[in-house]
Amino acid sequence: MSDVEKYCPDSLWHLVQPLLPAHPERHQGGGRRRIDDRVAVAAIAYVLQTGCPWEALPESFPISRATAHRRFTERVKQGVMQAFHEATLDVLGAAGQIDWSRASVDAMHVRALKGDLTGRSPVDRGKPGSKIHAVSDRDGLPLTVLVTAANVNDHTVLEDVLDNLRAIRQPLGRPRRWPAKLHGDKGHDYRSCRELVRRRGMIARIARKGIESAAHLGRHRYVIERCLEWVSRFRRLARRYDRKASHFIGFLRLACALICYRRAARLNLLTSNNP
Image 1: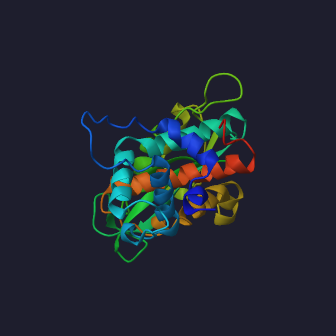
Image 2: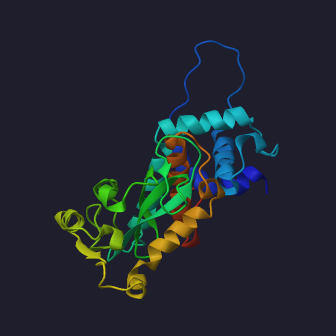
């Protein structure tokens, strides 16, 4: 099996291909032949999973480092990463594999170099970092993600995180956007946060400071910790090397899409001919 087939198998390619914009037409002859989009997708997935710099892309991928980086930049601007994540969620939702009974919200700090959406991390001795905010369903599938500076309090961006949720297809009826309940840690223990959750038709299950213990919190919220741990397994996200926040967010959304894709593949919801 080649590296292209390993990092972009047929089932993944048939899911991504319809999301890619059409190639720009050349009105004049000449020029080099365009590199296959599947090769570029495989190279981007390799960089995400291994964490290697673009300059260290193996020669087994028939694409130059500069071209792979340029394709990644184009796909980020075109919103392909987010569309891929939403497409995988639609596949799982249409099969009834998203548990809407409970959802959890939490954040994870990532050490970063200089760039936008970075700040002094309060949990890493004031070193620059970013924070990944995520919402997962009851099984730990990432429903949405958001990136802020590391010194941003969780409760101040809860509204942005919730509004980032998109409606997902269901086996029957209209697409669904909101889970029945939302669990949050003590960082969201504010009246404004509870009101935000209730206005969206969800029951707020937010821990109260000085009342509920950490052991009780873990009963329903361990799934979001597992979700963020899955995200951190993608080495490109373990530490932020991208100075542009849009590039880091692009890698993050691709990681969420691959997590959902692997769940769908494990459940045999995808085929190489008809995803």
